Length: 64
Image 1 (cartoon, rainbow, N blue to C red):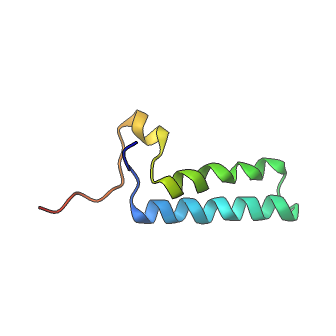
Image 2: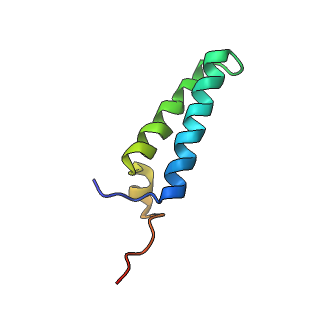
């Protein structure tokens, strides 16, 4: 697995995932909010399968 997410992308994913799960837990949104586990996992691993399929990477260019 190659990392294809930058630091900002990873942070936003984790925060959004936590927010979705919190809203589902509080009953603000339905049970579908527990899908927030997906962005938490992809943010923690730094690898997004959809990015891999589309050839996208938000990682900064390596410095030479």
